[in-house]
Length: 126
Image (tube, rainbow, N blue to C red; front, side, top):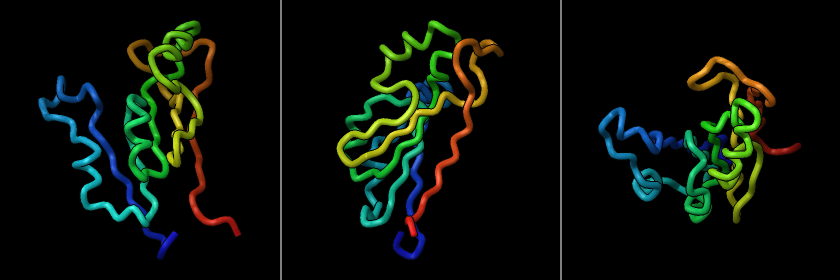
């Protein structure tokens, strides 16, 4: 990485307007001042519209939200709702990782899938 510099950009949740009343910024708005010669990482809670992110020179998008279904067999439903609901995907030159997360949503229970904390090392290989 050039001088160990990079960008981290993040987006409000796609449903955030229902809670905050604020309109979610577009990728055009979020990236207008970005120097894409440096690595760019995007934090986007829900892994929707991955093809749109891949149109930009975003290197890596981290997402969550799906909990990999949280309770078996709901992982089959999240698999239908999202292009990728858990794990790694590459589209064009953009890498995506969708985490099943550590916690839960709505009900404090997980059955048939694992919680995870992601540890990704960024940097040059020596």
